[in-house]
Image (tube, rainbow, N blue to C red; front, top):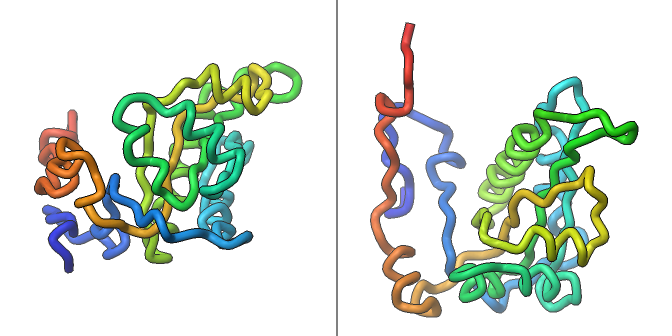
Length: 191
């Protein structure tokens, strides 16, 4: 157990208790070609409504043009730290099928796929951080996504780095105790 391990009110599997979202990534760590296959395979096998699998990914390893394109769309503090991640993954929801029929569950299913990706990454010894602060229109334009494909979030993934490399305000967040809303406050009705 590490100081970042979640203090849960009921037992959960170690991988879930140990998962957290750092901003400090090791800028020297790189993923060789194919190294992210396991985390993407975990996402592939996430549950989806009617088995439609309405998720797509844009995967970019640091140092490449695709990574630079994605990093340029990041907003606010995300610009200050995400470039140190070994890879950035744009998480895209397929919100309509090829015939134009809406897939209202697409974002939910994408979230499940990214959760599976996150748990697998943690099990493999990596860390992930999800980001919503980015320019969606810029991502869509840069990668020529049609209107059926909506970028929802970006995942930074890599090995943990030193919090000392972060700007002071982010370093404070990085080292602050983990907190969550109490379980009883999350359950609206219990029958």
